[in-house]
Image (cartoon, rainbow, N blue to C red):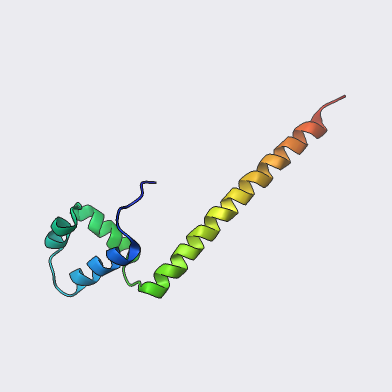
Length: 88
């Protein structure tokens, strides 16, 4: 997944500007992004404030760690099954 050069707080600030009546085209031009990128941000971050963003980051980090742990356990399990299935 491509990393964005904007922080979540910058994204939320841009979304709030649009809610206050500023045009999406102007905001996108100022930030140097495509309007579709702005709408993708809106779909992902609309209605969030600082506390919600912090919780989202924590959950994403926890999810990443759990996926890593699952991959390790799955690999260990596969290796054990291979060893047990061998006929010595």
